[in-house]
Length: 78
Image (cartoon, rainbow, N blue to C red; front, side, top):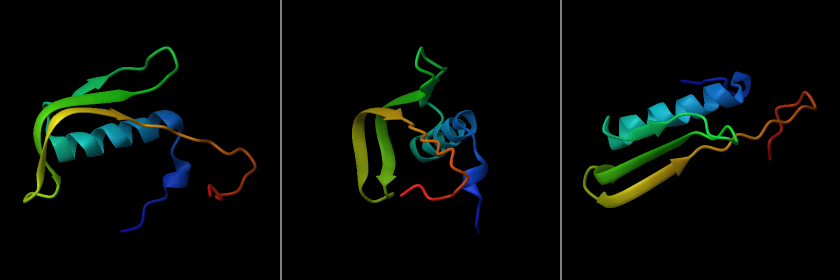
């Protein structure tokens, strides 16, 4: 499947990252709301099936999503 990620704004992108990480790490991952800088964070403490179900990582995780906008009308983010 193809998804047009260029249409996401910063808030939608951060929610997408949070949702994906909760799917990977589990629903016990703690999602924080917007901070002073507008960043979204997620933390998780425990064992998760990452990078795969055989090799599981264990520990304290801090996930932060960063969004970069480019206002010149192109989809070139390289």
